[in-house]
Image 1 (cartoon, rainbow, N blue to C red):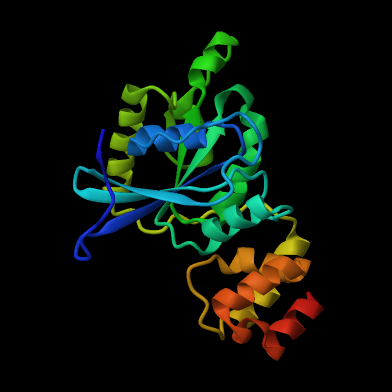
Image 2: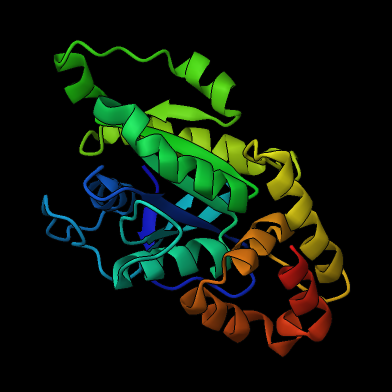
Length: 250
């Protein structure tokens, strides 16, 4: 296991890692084991209501692990989901570890696909594999990794050996010169055409750090809460006449 650190020299490179997923999949327990912290964890929705960060030195890298609130969607409906959405989309994480529930994989994959569309580098911790096995559920992680297009590591959040394996795999993933991995959900042609109209207008503005396709869809949806957040991050240029006209035509 790596060593938790409170203060990081400015000259050292830090890899920012977000721990994301549905509520009650063991994110906070995994965070505690990874970082050596011992916060109380509980089995109720919304327990993590802010973002806590701890630094871990492992191998050649220093990781800043952020434990963000559990969320079912990046289209926020609560303060917890808004915090999670903002960190995932605008927090500048280098890698996002999506924690999935092995006992209810289909249910927890929804947030994975949303995050995969936003974050260029995604890594899966398939948690609760011990409980899944007790329920007679066996998941082929190699096959799942092939289908999802990202590394999938089985974990038991309280088991240090299991988490060491996750950290070792994360080190390998972080050190790979694999560039930005792109991914897009298969949308109907009508939606793709509408998004492309907005993307064309977005190309004239300096908007970095977020998928233009994802951003175009959110602008078309007209989510006022998200639009306020987008204004704070990208300024009034995002709402120029050219972009607004493209959104209306879409």
